[in-house]
Image 1 (cartoon, one colour):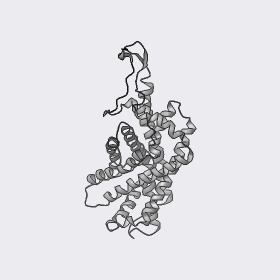
Image 2: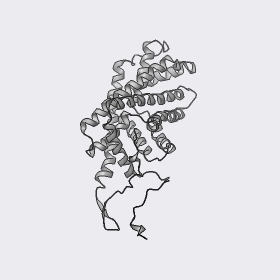
Image 3: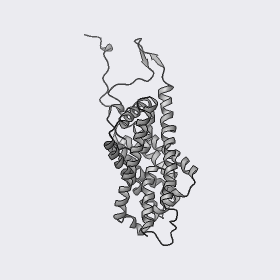
Image 4: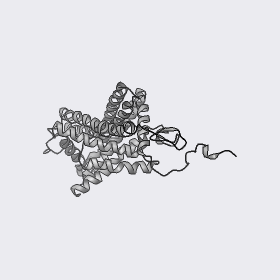
Length: 312
């Protein structure tokens, strides 16, 4: 009989433990390489899907926000929980979301993708998200969904748009940073899950927190702002509603600094920080009991989330 102690252990068939942060880092990098190398058509179409998915989360949020009977805190928290639908559709269904793709910076920092490959992905996905959101805007407007609750749903969209356009550029930039800090943390936590339930539970609190706090997500705004603009241009708002701020210039006033802030929050405060912790800070080696040198973070091939062909 051979020495079984020397045989490599097979990965467990069932494992209910969450993936470790070090395993999540490997997953994010590997998926980042795949994302950066997707063909244009696949990347763009998956981005269209994500833009529509986030728009559906925004639609769900608006229904809650249109209920004037709810207190401020209850409306914000419930609205945030409803909005979580958007990221769940992206992460579980599989799609390309600009804000989540800011984590490709981890693969870039490890020199697994070039600067151009990363920026190319961000540009394609940003515009794909915009197309998906605008497509949903048209469908929602034509469905007369905004007439629900005596027109309060449409009024809620317009009020939300005005509140997003009014702040100055610096405020919008900072709100964009804080938003994608939470969104990318939601993506990071979702990678720890081994089931659909795990992933959804992990993402709900960070996503609902950024909505409740009033932070700015560029893809969600691709739904809110054009829909409010369409309302204003078609005379769908009450006559006494001041829609003067809801212009194409006002939309750009929001989207540009929010997009830049989202990049800083996601790529900088999440991607770069975790890369430094698990790539740079733990780059040392340790000696195993058998005398072999192994990396400071050990992995079991075939058992981590990085072995799945995920698009999130």
